[in-house]
Length: 347
Image (cartoon, rainbow, N blue to C red; front, side):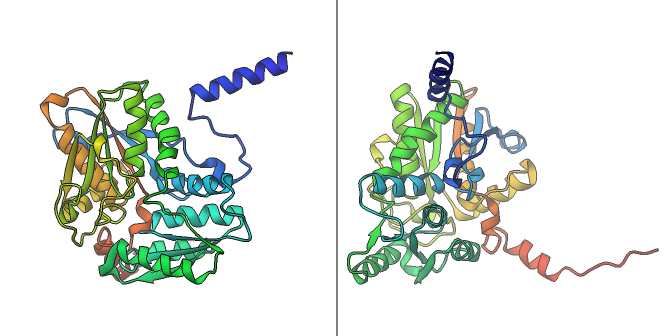
């Protein structure tokens, strides 16, 4: 009796605390989610931030990005519907990199063949990681962006004679669903139900849609702020264009992005996103990618307004900085490191 009573208590605690993880996981996929939060410190003070800016570190997922969540959700959702089978179905997806890395991880763990299609402008680190996880990588012309990658993935699907399955991260409802069921509740729990403003970049639209849907269900007054590249501000009604903020600004408004949830759209130039990401590393010890820099730059802008003094502002940090070493984010440091000469000890 006491054993079953104890099990009931444990189940109730898990429902109340979305941050509980297994002590020893059966699969790496069981470790996705339950990411920590940290306050923005020196960088916020230097920029006159008056809100309490809190960073949700999705960079600390097993494969270092928020896309690990949707990778698990997309694959397990399709499995539950009987649409894919390990060892039989070939999974296909067009990706700017991070979703592909998450999908390659989950596919490897579950025994699927994975083909990923990516614009050639994405970082070398992403290409290597995809190959290291056992995925087949197909590159498309960079100037065609995600539209070119999507067209190529459809071509690959047609060539597989019914064995292929496209994950469709931009349209698949399992994308916002996982954020509605996990990321949103985690944020609410971590901030003790005191969330005033939510800030997120928009790539597929799944994160900002799913999290906002949950937060609005428990607090209709939560303000939702979307972040997009200034050079490709399609959410703001402007034409798409080239930019350096990998992971957001796909050049179109994805089906998974519910724009009716957005209270504000902040446009961040690529150079500001890069500068902010660099500052986070140097001044906070928080090593992140370019889209994280864009999100924090937007959070600083919003968090500096007088009307937001004392409010809790949560911002998603989508990915870790290490996979951007070969990009514009750290190009000068890479060149410096490559050219650095050894120094003899003077005895």
